[in-house]
Amino acid sequence: MNTTTSHSDTIELLIDLVQRPSVTPVDHGCQQLIAKRLEAHGFNIEPMRHGDVDNLWARLGTEEPVFVFAGHTDVVPTGDESDWTNPPFSAVVKDGHLHGRGAADMKGGVAAFVTAIERFIQSGQSFNGSLAVLLTSDEEGPAVNGTKKVVEALDARSEAIHYCVVGEPTSTTTLGDTIKNGRRGSLSAKLIVQGKQGHVAYPHLADNPAHKSFKMLNDLVAIKWDEGDEHFPATTLQISNINAGTGAGNVIPGTLSVEFNLRYSPAITTEHIQSQVAALIEEHKLDANIEWHDSAAPFLTPTGSLTDAMREAVKSVVDVSAKLDTGGGTSDGRFIAKTCEQVIEFGPLNATIHQTDERISCDDIDSLSIIYENLLGLILGTQES
Ligand SMILES: [Zn+2]
Image 1 (cartoon, rainbow, N blue to C red):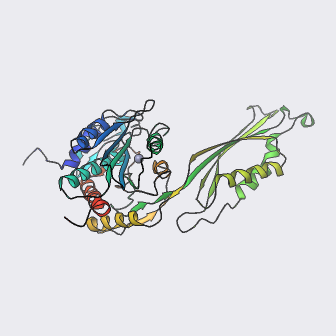
Image 2 (image 1 turned 45 degrees about the horizontal axis):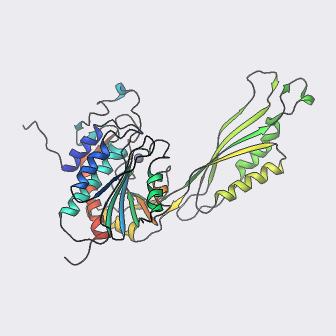
Image 3 (image 1 turned 180 degrees about the horizontal axis):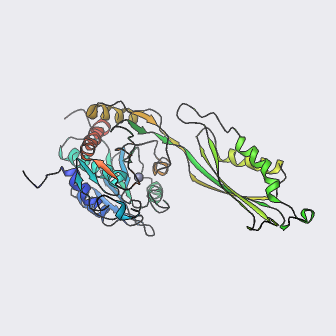
Protein backbone atom coordinates (compact mmCIF):
# COMPACT_ATOMS: atom_id res chain seq x y z
CA MET A 1 0.00 0.00 0.00
CA ASN A 2 1.07 3.49 -0.77
CA THR A 3 1.81 5.31 2.46
CA THR A 4 1.90 8.80 0.99
CA THR A 5 -1.60 10.03 0.45
CA SER A 6 -2.12 12.67 -2.16
CA HIS A 7 -4.53 15.44 -1.38
CA SER A 8 -6.32 17.90 -3.60
CA ASP A 9 -4.88 21.36 -4.00
CA THR A 10 -7.61 22.71 -1.70
CA ILE A 11 -6.85 20.22 1.09
CA GLU A 12 -3.10 20.92 0.75
CA LEU A 13 -3.82 24.60 1.24
CA LEU A 14 -6.12 23.88 4.15
CA ILE A 15 -3.43 21.78 5.85
CA ASP A 16 -0.96 24.63 5.46
CA LEU A 17 -3.47 27.09 6.96
CA VAL A 18 -4.50 24.88 9.89
CA GLN A 19 -0.85 24.26 10.79
CA ARG A 20 -0.49 27.98 11.47
CA PRO A 21 -1.70 28.62 15.05
CA SER A 22 -3.46 31.86 14.19
CA VAL A 23 -5.38 32.43 17.39
CA THR A 24 -7.08 35.87 17.33
CA PRO A 25 -5.68 38.38 16.50
CA VAL A 26 -2.54 36.61 15.24
CA ASP A 27 -2.63 35.77 11.53
CA HIS A 28 0.59 33.74 11.50
CA GLY A 29 1.27 34.29 7.78
CA CYS A 30 -2.04 32.87 6.54
CA GLN A 31 -2.90 36.03 4.65
CA GLN A 32 0.59 36.35 3.18
CA LEU A 33 0.36 32.82 1.88
CA ILE A 34 -2.98 33.54 0.22
CA ALA A 35 -1.84 36.95 -1.03
CA LYS A 36 1.12 35.30 -2.81
CA ARG A 37 -1.17 32.84 -4.56
CA LEU A 38 -3.62 35.53 -5.65
CA GLU A 39 -0.82 37.86 -6.75
CA ALA A 40 0.42 35.14 -9.07
CA HIS A 41 -2.98 35.34 -10.76
CA GLY A 42 -2.81 39.08 -11.24
CA PHE A 43 -4.55 40.28 -8.10
CA ASN A 44 -3.60 43.66 -6.68
CA ILE A 45 -2.59 43.00 -3.07
CA GLU A 46 -3.33 45.49 -0.34
CA PRO A 47 -2.57 44.55 3.26
CA MET A 48 -4.59 46.73 5.67
CA ARG A 49 -3.19 46.34 9.14
CA HIS A 50 -5.05 48.12 11.93
CA GLY A 51 -3.68 47.94 15.47
CA ASP A 52 -2.64 44.33 16.01
CA VAL A 53 -4.96 43.00 13.31
CA ASP A 54 -3.89 41.87 9.84
CA ASN A 55 -6.41 42.38 7.06
CA LEU A 56 -6.09 41.76 3.35
CA TRP A 57 -7.87 43.32 0.42
CA ALA A 58 -6.97 41.65 -2.87
CA ARG A 59 -8.64 42.61 -6.12
CA LEU A 60 -8.46 41.51 -9.74
CA GLY A 61 -9.87 43.96 -12.26
CA THR A 62 -11.16 47.50 -12.12
CA GLU A 63 -14.62 47.03 -13.56
CA GLU A 64 -17.96 46.63 -11.82
CA PRO A 65 -19.73 44.63 -10.53
CA VAL A 66 -17.33 43.65 -7.75
CA PHE A 67 -17.72 40.16 -6.39
CA VAL A 68 -16.05 39.46 -3.03
CA PHE A 69 -15.24 36.32 -1.13
CA ALA A 70 -14.81 37.26 2.55
CA GLY A 71 -13.56 35.40 5.56
CA HIS A 72 -11.30 35.24 8.57
CA THR A 73 -7.95 33.58 9.10
CA ASP A 74 -8.05 33.75 12.90
CA VAL A 75 -9.31 30.92 15.08
CA VAL A 76 -10.62 30.62 18.63
CA PRO A 77 -8.27 29.25 21.32
CA THR A 78 -7.91 25.48 21.58
CA GLY A 79 -8.56 25.06 25.28
CA ASP A 80 -6.50 22.31 26.92
CA GLU A 81 -4.59 20.72 24.04
CA SER A 82 -4.45 17.39 25.86
CA ASP A 83 -8.25 17.15 25.42
CA TRP A 84 -7.73 16.84 21.67
CA THR A 85 -7.40 13.41 20.03
CA ASN A 86 -4.86 14.94 17.61
CA PRO A 87 -2.87 18.08 18.38
CA PRO A 88 -5.08 21.01 17.29
CA PHE A 89 -2.55 22.47 14.84
CA SER A 90 -1.28 19.21 13.38
CA ALA A 91 -3.90 19.16 10.58
CA VAL A 92 -4.07 15.37 10.61
CA VAL A 93 -6.14 13.80 7.84
CA LYS A 94 -7.87 10.68 9.07
CA ASP A 95 -10.97 8.81 7.92
CA GLY A 96 -11.63 11.41 5.26
CA HIS A 97 -11.59 14.30 7.71
CA LEU A 98 -9.08 17.03 8.32
CA HIS A 99 -8.72 17.60 12.07
CA GLY A 100 -7.66 20.83 13.70
CA ARG A 101 -8.63 24.19 15.11
CA GLY A 102 -10.11 26.33 12.34
CA ALA A 103 -10.66 23.44 9.90
CA ALA A 104 -14.39 24.23 9.88
CA ASP A 105 -14.40 27.81 11.23
CA MET A 106 -13.32 28.91 8.78
CA LYS A 107 -10.07 27.98 7.09
CA GLY A 108 -11.99 25.29 5.17
CA GLY A 109 -14.14 27.94 3.51
CA VAL A 110 -11.12 30.16 2.87
CA ALA A 111 -9.10 27.36 1.23
CA ALA A 112 -12.13 26.41 -0.86
CA PHE A 113 -12.68 29.90 -2.25
CA VAL A 114 -8.99 30.53 -2.91
CA THR A 115 -8.65 27.44 -5.11
CA ALA A 116 -12.08 28.13 -6.68
CA ILE A 117 -10.78 31.54 -7.77
CA GLU A 118 -7.55 30.00 -9.09
CA ARG A 119 -9.39 27.44 -11.21
CA PHE A 120 -11.90 30.03 -12.41
CA ILE A 121 -9.06 32.25 -13.66
CA GLN A 122 -7.03 29.37 -15.06
CA SER A 123 -10.05 28.20 -17.06
CA GLY A 124 -9.50 31.35 -19.13
CA GLN A 125 -13.19 32.16 -19.35
CA SER A 126 -13.85 35.84 -19.75
CA PHE A 127 -15.78 37.52 -17.01
CA ASN A 128 -17.52 40.77 -16.24
CA GLY A 129 -16.51 43.00 -13.37
CA SER A 130 -13.91 42.38 -10.69
CA LEU A 131 -13.12 39.59 -8.29
CA ALA A 132 -11.88 40.34 -4.78
CA VAL A 133 -10.95 38.70 -1.50
CA LEU A 134 -11.37 40.29 1.94
CA LEU A 135 -9.65 38.58 4.87
CA THR A 136 -9.31 39.54 8.51
CA SER A 137 -7.63 38.05 11.58
CA ASP A 138 -10.09 39.67 13.99
CA GLU A 139 -13.44 37.98 13.48
CA GLU A 140 -13.39 35.82 16.59
CA GLY A 141 -12.18 38.70 18.77
CA PRO A 142 -13.47 42.23 19.33
CA ALA A 143 -14.04 42.69 15.57
CA VAL A 144 -13.05 46.34 15.82
CA ASN A 145 -9.94 46.50 13.61
CA GLY A 146 -10.99 43.88 11.11
CA THR A 147 -13.64 43.73 8.38
CA LYS A 148 -15.29 46.88 9.71
CA LYS A 149 -12.14 48.94 9.04
CA VAL A 150 -11.60 47.46 5.60
CA VAL A 151 -15.19 48.24 4.58
CA GLU A 152 -14.81 51.79 5.89
CA ALA A 153 -11.57 52.25 3.92
CA LEU A 154 -13.16 51.00 0.73
CA ASP A 155 -16.22 53.15 1.27
CA ALA A 156 -14.05 56.24 1.90
CA ARG A 157 -12.50 55.89 -1.55
CA SER A 158 -15.87 54.96 -3.15
CA GLU A 159 -14.81 51.42 -3.94
CA ALA A 160 -18.08 49.50 -4.11
CA ILE A 161 -18.88 45.88 -3.36
CA HIS A 162 -21.86 44.47 -5.25
CA TYR A 163 -21.89 40.83 -4.22
CA CYS A 164 -20.30 39.21 -1.21
CA VAL A 165 -20.13 35.61 -0.10
CA VAL A 166 -18.73 34.98 3.38
CA GLY A 167 -17.37 31.44 3.59
CA GLU A 168 -18.51 30.82 7.18
CA PRO A 169 -19.63 27.30 8.05
CA THR A 170 -23.40 27.57 7.54
CA SER A 171 -24.31 23.98 6.64
CA THR A 172 -25.95 22.07 9.48
CA THR A 173 -26.61 18.45 8.48
CA THR A 174 -25.30 18.09 4.94
CA LEU A 175 -23.12 20.34 2.83
CA GLY A 176 -25.35 22.85 1.09
CA ASP A 177 -28.46 22.67 3.26
CA THR A 178 -28.27 26.24 4.62
CA ILE A 179 -27.42 29.67 3.22
CA LYS A 180 -27.51 32.57 5.65
CA ASN A 181 -29.09 35.59 3.97
CA GLY A 182 -29.14 37.78 7.05
CA ARG A 183 -28.60 37.97 10.76
CA ARG A 184 -30.48 39.44 13.67
CA GLY A 185 -29.11 42.51 15.41
CA SER A 186 -27.65 42.46 18.91
CA LEU A 187 -28.25 45.31 21.36
CA SER A 188 -26.99 45.24 24.96
CA ALA A 189 -27.81 47.48 27.91
CA LYS A 190 -26.48 48.03 31.39
CA LEU A 191 -29.00 49.63 33.72
CA ILE A 192 -27.94 51.00 37.10
CA VAL A 193 -30.73 51.88 39.51
CA GLN A 194 -29.80 54.23 42.35
CA GLY A 195 -31.03 53.72 45.88
CA LYS A 196 -29.64 54.48 49.30
CA GLN A 197 -27.65 51.98 51.31
CA GLY A 198 -28.69 51.35 54.90
CA HIS A 199 -29.38 48.91 57.72
CA VAL A 200 -32.12 46.37 57.00
CA ALA A 201 -33.57 47.14 60.44
CA TYR A 202 -33.90 50.84 59.57
CA PRO A 203 -35.46 50.82 56.08
CA HIS A 204 -36.96 54.26 56.57
CA LEU A 205 -33.43 55.63 56.50
CA ALA A 206 -32.56 53.83 53.27
CA ASP A 207 -34.01 53.39 49.77
CA ASN A 208 -33.92 49.85 48.41
CA PRO A 209 -33.16 49.83 44.63
CA ALA A 210 -34.08 46.13 44.38
CA HIS A 211 -37.59 46.70 45.62
CA LYS A 212 -38.04 49.63 43.26
CA SER A 213 -36.76 47.74 40.21
CA PHE A 214 -38.69 44.48 40.24
CA LYS A 215 -41.94 45.86 38.82
CA MET A 216 -40.11 47.69 36.08
CA LEU A 217 -38.06 44.61 35.17
CA ASN A 218 -41.19 42.51 35.16
CA ASP A 219 -42.77 44.92 32.68
CA LEU A 220 -39.55 44.97 30.66
CA VAL A 221 -39.39 41.22 30.08
CA ALA A 222 -43.12 41.14 29.26
CA ILE A 223 -42.82 43.57 26.33
CA LYS A 224 -43.79 42.12 22.98
CA TRP A 225 -41.43 43.99 20.70
CA ASP A 226 -42.62 42.78 17.32
CA GLU A 227 -44.05 39.75 15.58
CA GLY A 228 -41.01 39.00 13.46
CA ASP A 229 -41.61 38.47 9.75
CA GLU A 230 -41.14 35.88 7.00
CA HIS A 231 -37.34 36.13 7.33
CA PHE A 232 -36.85 36.78 11.05
CA PRO A 233 -38.21 35.40 14.31
CA ALA A 234 -39.70 37.92 16.77
CA THR A 235 -37.28 40.11 18.76
CA THR A 236 -36.32 38.65 22.12
CA LEU A 237 -34.90 40.16 25.32
CA GLN A 238 -32.94 38.27 27.94
CA ILE A 239 -31.60 39.51 31.26
CA SER A 240 -28.05 38.20 31.57
CA ASN A 241 -26.88 39.65 34.89
CA ILE A 242 -28.46 41.19 37.99
CA ASN A 243 -26.35 42.41 40.88
CA ALA A 244 -27.13 44.23 44.11
CA GLY A 245 -25.98 44.05 47.67
CA THR A 246 -22.71 43.97 49.53
CA GLY A 247 -22.89 40.30 50.39
CA ALA A 248 -23.88 41.05 53.98
CA GLY A 249 -27.31 39.95 55.12
CA ASN A 250 -28.09 43.07 57.10
CA VAL A 251 -27.37 45.76 54.49
CA ILE A 252 -29.85 47.29 52.06
CA PRO A 253 -28.00 47.70 48.75
CA GLY A 254 -27.18 51.17 47.48
CA THR A 255 -27.49 50.32 43.79
CA LEU A 256 -28.81 47.57 41.57
CA SER A 257 -27.29 46.79 38.19
CA VAL A 258 -29.00 44.80 35.45
CA GLU A 259 -27.59 43.74 32.11
CA PHE A 260 -29.80 42.60 29.27
CA ASN A 261 -29.46 41.82 25.58
CA LEU A 262 -31.90 41.97 22.71
CA ARG A 263 -31.66 39.96 19.53
CA TYR A 264 -33.72 42.05 17.22
CA SER A 265 -35.14 41.80 13.75
CA PRO A 266 -35.07 44.63 11.18
CA ALA A 267 -38.81 45.08 11.93
CA ILE A 268 -37.73 47.23 14.87
CA THR A 269 -35.10 49.96 15.35
CA THR A 270 -32.69 50.42 18.24
CA GLU A 271 -34.15 53.93 18.73
CA HIS A 272 -37.58 52.41 19.26
CA ILE A 273 -36.22 49.88 21.77
CA GLN A 274 -34.31 52.54 23.65
CA SER A 275 -37.24 54.93 23.86
CA GLN A 276 -39.55 52.18 25.14
CA VAL A 277 -37.10 51.30 27.89
CA ALA A 278 -36.65 54.97 28.77
CA ALA A 279 -40.44 55.35 29.03
CA LEU A 280 -40.58 52.37 31.37
CA ILE A 281 -37.88 53.85 33.64
CA GLU A 282 -39.84 57.09 33.70
CA GLU A 283 -43.15 55.35 34.38
CA HIS A 284 -41.68 53.55 37.39
CA LYS A 285 -39.96 56.73 38.59
CA LEU A 286 -36.56 55.10 38.87
CA ASP A 287 -33.41 57.10 39.45
CA ALA A 288 -31.52 55.17 36.84
CA ASN A 289 -28.68 55.40 34.41
CA ILE A 290 -28.58 53.25 31.27
CA GLU A 291 -25.73 52.53 28.88
CA TRP A 292 -26.44 50.99 25.51
CA HIS A 293 -24.09 49.00 23.31
CA ASP A 294 -25.27 48.30 19.79
CA SER A 295 -22.92 45.46 18.91
CA ALA A 296 -24.46 44.37 15.63
CA ALA A 297 -27.00 45.85 13.25
CA PRO A 298 -29.30 43.34 11.58
CA PHE A 299 -29.11 42.77 7.86
CA LEU A 300 -31.12 40.96 5.25
CA THR A 301 -30.35 40.08 1.66
CA PRO A 302 -33.70 39.46 0.01
CA THR A 303 -34.09 36.64 -2.47
CA GLY A 304 -32.40 37.83 -5.64
CA SER A 305 -29.61 37.21 -8.11
CA LEU A 306 -27.03 36.18 -5.50
CA THR A 307 -29.24 33.86 -3.43
CA ASP A 308 -30.57 32.32 -6.66
CA ALA A 309 -27.08 31.75 -8.08
CA MET A 310 -25.83 30.32 -4.77
CA ARG A 311 -28.74 27.88 -4.62
CA GLU A 312 -28.18 26.88 -8.26
CA ALA A 313 -24.46 26.32 -7.68
CA VAL A 314 -25.17 24.15 -4.63
CA LYS A 315 -27.79 22.14 -6.51
CA SER A 316 -25.44 21.56 -9.45
CA VAL A 317 -22.68 20.07 -7.30
CA VAL A 318 -24.29 18.27 -4.35
CA ASP A 319 -27.95 18.08 -5.48
CA VAL A 320 -29.22 19.74 -2.31
CA SER A 321 -31.95 22.39 -2.17
CA ALA A 322 -30.47 24.99 0.15
CA LYS A 323 -32.78 26.88 2.48
CA LEU A 324 -32.31 30.54 3.36
CA ASP A 325 -31.92 31.22 7.06
CA THR A 326 -31.18 34.17 9.37
CA GLY A 327 -30.66 32.29 12.66
CA GLY A 328 -27.57 32.02 14.80
CA GLY A 329 -25.21 34.64 16.20
CA THR A 330 -23.59 37.57 14.47
CA SER A 331 -20.87 37.52 11.82
CA ASP A 332 -18.73 39.94 9.84
CA GLY A 333 -21.43 39.91 7.16
CA ARG A 334 -23.02 42.70 9.19
CA PHE A 335 -20.16 45.09 8.40
CA ILE A 336 -20.12 44.33 4.69
CA ALA A 337 -23.91 44.69 4.49
CA LYS A 338 -23.48 48.36 5.40
CA THR A 339 -22.25 49.10 1.89
CA CYS A 340 -23.17 45.99 -0.09
CA GLU A 341 -26.75 45.10 -0.92
CA GLN A 342 -26.23 41.40 -1.52
CA VAL A 343 -24.32 39.63 1.25
CA ILE A 344 -24.79 35.97 2.01
CA GLU A 345 -22.87 33.39 3.99
CA PHE A 346 -22.31 29.89 2.76
CA GLY A 347 -19.84 27.23 3.76
CA PRO A 348 -19.23 23.77 5.21
CA LEU A 349 -20.75 21.97 8.21
CA ASN A 350 -20.67 23.82 11.52
CA ALA A 351 -21.19 20.77 13.75
CA THR A 352 -17.76 20.93 15.43
CA ILE A 353 -16.91 24.64 15.37
CA HIS A 354 -15.26 26.05 18.50
CA GLN A 355 -15.14 22.48 19.94
CA THR A 356 -12.25 20.20 20.79
CA ASP A 357 -11.58 17.82 17.87
CA GLU A 358 -12.89 20.35 15.36
CA ARG A 359 -12.80 18.67 11.96
CA ILE A 360 -14.17 18.87 8.44
CA SER A 361 -14.85 16.36 5.67
CA CYS A 362 -12.24 16.61 2.91
CA ASP A 363 -14.83 15.63 0.30
CA ASP A 364 -17.08 18.44 1.52
CA ILE A 365 -14.29 21.00 1.18
CA ASP A 366 -13.50 19.79 -2.34
CA SER A 367 -17.20 19.97 -3.26
CA LEU A 368 -17.48 23.40 -1.66
CA SER A 369 -14.63 24.65 -3.81
CA ILE A 370 -16.45 23.49 -6.95
CA ILE A 371 -19.67 25.14 -5.72
CA TYR A 372 -17.80 28.44 -5.28
CA GLU A 373 -16.23 28.08 -8.73
CA ASN A 374 -19.63 27.47 -10.31
CA LEU A 375 -21.02 30.46 -8.45
CA LEU A 376 -18.34 32.68 -9.98
CA GLY A 377 -19.35 31.47 -13.42
CA LEU A 378 -23.01 32.21 -12.69
CA ILE A 379 -22.41 35.70 -11.27
CA LEU A 380 -19.48 37.01 -13.29
CA GLY A 381 -19.24 34.71 -16.27
CA THR A 382 -20.08 35.95 -19.73
CA GLN A 383 -22.13 33.88 -22.12
CA GLU A 384 -19.90 34.31 -25.19
CA SER A 385 -16.68 32.36 -25.18
ZN1 LIG B 1 -16.12 31.99 11.75
